[in-house]
Length: 461
Ligand code: HEC
Ligand code: HEC
Ligand code: HEC
Ligand code: HEC
Ligand code: HEC
Image (tube, rainbow, N blue to C red; front, side, top):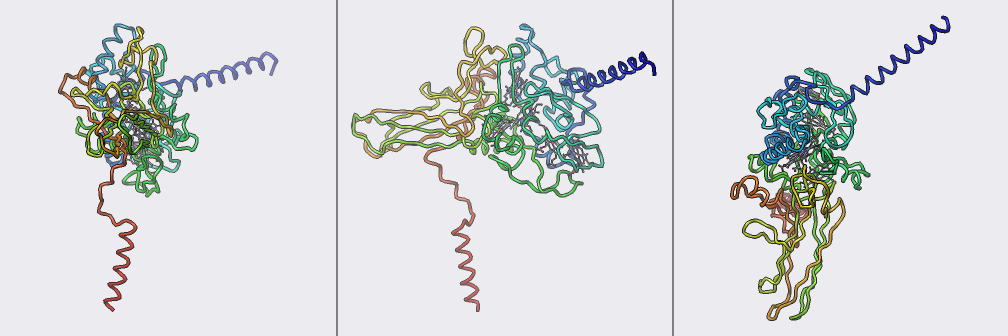
């Protein structure tokens, strides 16, 4: 080979290498509108033929309702008008709420008129299992490869009807972090950060992922779920569940998804605990100081998390005298469903360009306040009143921590007064409510049965 030829061969190889590298980067770019057609994705009902359990769990979840959700739709229509006027990207919300609708170019228009049935399934089976890669955290930078191969996390999985490929990322919080962090499409302000809240928590350190709490029967940590991942597959020591339950007992209730509503209440009731310090008695005219500690004992992120401009957590605190006469009451709802203005509401308040509070996150320019309670952290509230004349000791203090998916005011504004009543869920109470007496045996019961059994056998002899 002459010297020139060698140089040419070098450059040829170099160019090919460069192209290959560029190609692999191009392949990893996030999927965009028009990259696919919706017919490349299967309806979830097809998967249910062999994955009946996963389907039954997912069906009725907020993932399955992510596009149908009337609350989302109402906000989307407001966004639609403002986006057009303000030059914001029309497909912003749909990337997460109807990913198939977005990548197949069925969105815009945002009025759902172009959406295929598979796109209306929201965050569904074939979308989630066609994610080959992710470009990072937030604003849904998924890289899709729909087709024969379904991506999962097991390395020994084989299916007669489709290819399987393993990717560890399915077992990591980064998978969920694609959509569970939201940044403003123009100014990049953080609008939701469930992933980051988790990442900075003790749960991330000890390896308790989103999947451990939201894809297993254990609400506050991993719990095994033995069974089959496919009816025609092998027995497995653990199969991940697909309920994806959080705190939404409002939209699930209205949509008639009772199983998911019940589970949401259960999740909320595993998230927090209350400690109350208050004197048992006081003289008339004396100041009675009460201290309540609210601890986020179960959630792997702040409470509330997600769309925290809507969610509300607050404490209702009542003190009565021995005769039941009310001495102090904070955190009650008025007849319009508004929380007493003296109470602390745990949520995020965004400000628009004029500095006014707004729940329309696309108008948000800054954060006015954010007092939410971090994972395994506590907030302390101090309350006091003056003991009136004629009140009898002891003083009885009760406290309840409430959760609501949105303020009644905002829901009334969107849908008209009297259309929907937003349910108030009790997350924790002080003193702790006595467990509803379940007809179990318990330790003492079991002992009694054993003893009776022995006596019976002795008598028979
Ligand atoms: C004809 C039956 C059948 C149909 C239909 C089917 N699968 Fe499967 N699938 C299987 C079997 C069997 C396995 C292997 C299960 C195992 O290894 O435990 C499997 C494995 C998987 C895995 C691998 C999970 C892992 O272990 O990591 C994924 C993901 C998956 N299927 C998704 C889907 C999706 C999405 C659909 C619908 C588009 C679908 N499947 C339709 C039978 C089926
Ligand atoms: C939000 C995305 C998402 C949706 C929607 C979803 N999955 Fe999954 N699925 C996952 C993830 C993530 C895992 C792996 C969990 C892990 O390993 O920690 C998984 C695991 C699985 C597995 C393997 C379970 C096991 O433990 O072996 C099967 C099978 C499966 N999914 C099928 C389905 C089917 C069928 C549907 C629709 C009814 C569906 N998935 C919907 C994300 C999703
Ligand atoms: C494609 C984006 C996307 C991915 C990926 C995704 N989610 Fe979601 N998730 C959503 C959307 C959108 C909603 C809300 C739908 C609604 O309320 O209208 C949601 C809702 C939820 C809820 C219900 C929240 C509530 O208030 O009750 C839970 C829990 C949840 N997701 C957990 C997960 C977990 C765990 C993962 C990872 C395995 C995951 N999600 C992956 C988009 C996604
Ligand atoms: C240690 C268990 C645990 C971990 C880890 C965990 N969660 Fe949760 N999650 C909960 C509990 C309990 C609730 C109910 C309390 C609440 O609504 O905040 C919840 C609620 C939610 C909600 C509804 C939030 C609200 O306040 O309305 C979303 C969305 C959610 N989780 C997503 C995730 C995602 C995404 C991850 C991982 C980045 C994750 N979770 C990690 C236990 C956990
Ligand atoms: C990066 C992903 C992502 C984007 C973009 C996104 N969302 Fe969401 N949205 C979510 C997730 C995840 C949840 C559930 C979190 C939770 O439950 O707190 C959610 C929940 C909601 C809810 C609450 C629904 C309920 O039933 O309580 C509304 C309303 C909503 N989104 C509207 C919008 C609108 C309007 C846009 C566009 C301006 C938008 N979202 C953009 C991921 C996204």
